[in-house]
Length: 133
Image (cartoon, rainbow, N blue to C red):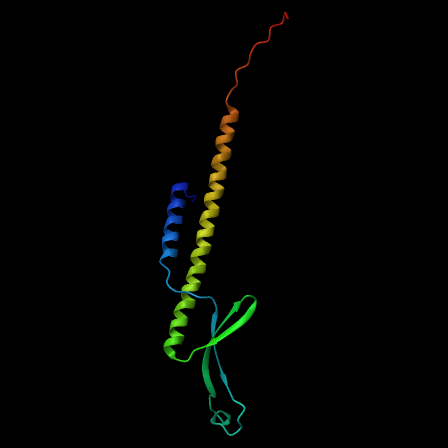
């Protein structure tokens, strides 16, 4: 089903409102690390010991370089998880907004071309040329 220009503009307006309602967000991925340490006498080297961790880190790119942030508390981890989730929401909404805007642009182009075509189809008045000159 093809949407009308008015429907697409309404969708765009809704997406813009949803973007404006976003909370704090930041890019990156949160991953867990852990395992055995370098101390052979540590509990992590015992049989069936799960090892250290998991320790969670936020990894992201800043000016082409990888930056890693560790979390000192569970509260800091949960805050970062909310911010990364909000970033993914931002990305989805931005892509939807781009898609709707592209549809609007294509539809406006089609309408403009149709309007120009109608103008060209109008009959022109022709002046009769006199034969005796």
